[in-house]
Image (cartoon, rainbow, N blue to C red; front, side, top):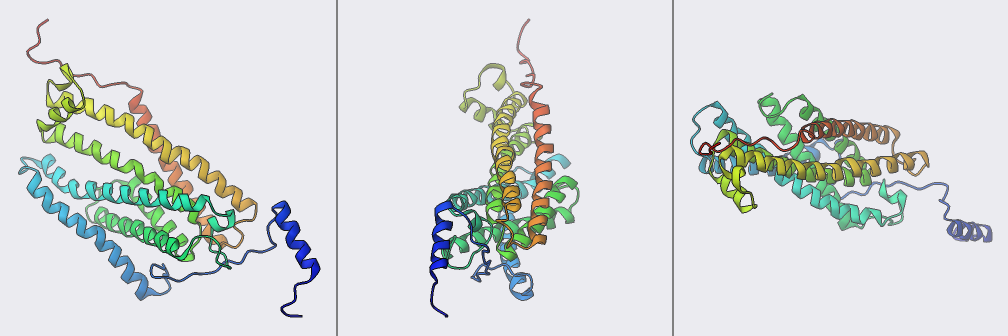
Length: 329
């Protein structure tokens, strides 16, 4: 009868609990909230996308004004490019730092959950709390809004603001974000995926060094190099200081990139495959799980491509510094 639990059912539950087996089926539910990503609700989706698009666009426009105030009047096309790239580079660094911190918080929550709760929302109040899920979806929107905003500028000014590999990167992860966010699934992969953004601010620092030393020829580069302990030939000219700082930046980039985009992917991707093969992800729509896994795989290949370029430059060793003009031989 309804409401009566049979002895057989109780015994089955004890066995499942004792041996760690999973129930025959886990029910996936949809949990609406203030940050729900539902493309079928065109009005709501468009409004939220526009709102998060404008978060990054407003920051970019503010930085454009800062560039006019901070960077001297350009003398040639290369210096004009510095002003043009400044808002993009700094906006990207702010976005990357923010979502990487958020993703680290989310990952801490996710690893404490049962495997099923790491990939979708289960019925019965399991998994993330309502406030944690809102935080996760807010992070999804920040990520998607930035990608759409940055891609829009790259398309308008192509190829000045980014080449095809960066366009592919943005489009791939836009698609993955919408697929996962709209179904509230694949949450663990997105947590470790966004941690990879931690390497982006270091790339921004490299761009600043190159722009200040090679294009703007700013004496401030020497000041920074001296503050970091460089002496002798390394601070004898702006170009030498720039080379020394860029090599140091490259070492930091390789270490960070290896940890957050090679090691983290090497741990997270096999776990995702294991969850798929073991049936844990069976409630996740097949199209979503296979598409997100494939798209993240493309991103992993891009990471390997970029990392190989970094290693190729690193094996050449420190750059040769120009000897001071006053030196005697």
